[in-house]
Image 1 (cartoon, rainbow, N blue to C red):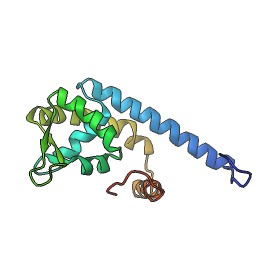
Image 2: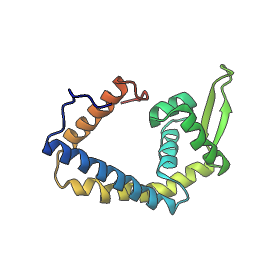
Image 3: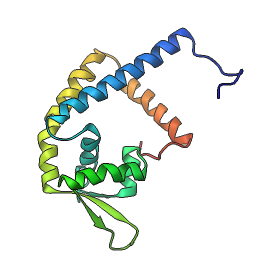
Image 4: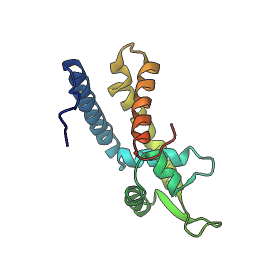
Length: 160
């Protein structure tokens, strides 16, 4: 509910906010469409990258949910699709009966290896090269501050 004490966005703030929304939505749509040629979505790719970044190729579901900034139930639905397509497997935790690991399969690693050049090229073409000399460190710091603010306000935990 908006209250009478709400501090409205000024013209420049509104312009920046709307530009951010348009850019982020279009960028995610474009990157997702490019990865579709590899039979995975951008959300799938993110999960595969997190698993591949671990020497063991596996993460506890709670840790993976935190890294991907999604709820545990949202991650379970994503993982179901990846398990069905043979890219990820589930493994019970031997020390905690409630714990479950998501494990990158060899098929998943091969799919990730095939998709990575497409994704990295897309990020460079659609995002990095569009910044044209902008200060990438300042942009990263600003966006990280937004993420920290949402986590502090009760959003999903993350590793920043």
